[in-house]
Amino acid sequence: MFQGTYTALVTPFNKDGSVDYGALRALVEAQAAAGIAGVCPVGTTGESPTLDYEEHEEVIRKTVEYTAGRMQVVAGTGGNSTREAVELTRHAIDDGADATLQIAPYYNKPTPEGLYRHFSEVADVGLPVLLYNAPGRTSRDIPVAVVKRLAGHPKIAGIKEAAGDANRVNLIRAAIGDQIDILSGDDSLTLPMMAAGAKGVVSVASNVVPAEVVEMVRLALANDFAGALRIHTRLLDLFADLFIEVNPVPVKAAMAMLGTAQEVYRLPLCEMRPENREKLAATMKKLGLVK
Image 1 (spheres, helix red, strand yellow):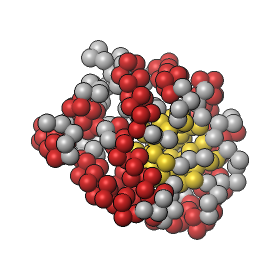
Image 2 (cartoon, helix red, strand yellow):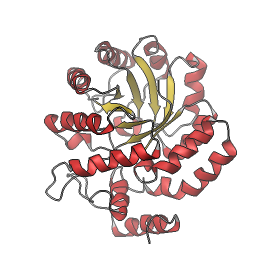
Image 3 (cartoon, helix red, strand yellow):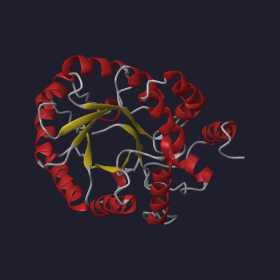
């Protein structure tokens, strides 16, 4: 079900901090023009922790409306409360999402059994689930043994691997083969993960350079790893600089340089430090993205 390039969409804000739906529509249009396979609204990159419930649902609903069936919408509806994640997922079904991105519950540190029960209850709602393993964010890794158990659920369709470890692809495939799809959750690891059997990426960089990320993934899927490596090498500094500070601060700064979104965040996120902004701007200039 999951193959290709999926963009972890930013949530653009107006100067007053409200959601900028005009900029969101334009961003979706740019993704469609680049041939993106899907978009993931209201995930980490979409600043989900600072959106209220009404905004959360509205961003998903508007994203579905703007995509108009041209790409998958994998809605971020996770939480550290299973009841909350289930409720958000039900809303995503009503709003027309194609799948749900489910982060491992954060802060309360569930056991492997708790993780299994949590994801199973969300999957029982009926929307295909893309598990999201990001222990740097959650303090909890989704153990491969838990992934193996969950793969038996008909609605667990894939996993986004953002643990910073390309070997996770090998471990999961050794345990369950191709039973579920694996996507890289780290732009810089997309190519090595795809060489090991991942089917694409949930990308932050594709907010900035969607066509190039799409082409890199397309070439890798076609087993043209030499061609994919050329793009990977060209974009490597950008991949790094988009995480020079916590995501999504740098990607919003980069988009502001391009004029595609305003550099507006909700606290506790705030603007980049000047020296990091200069480094990002230099990389953008080197790539010919800005003058």
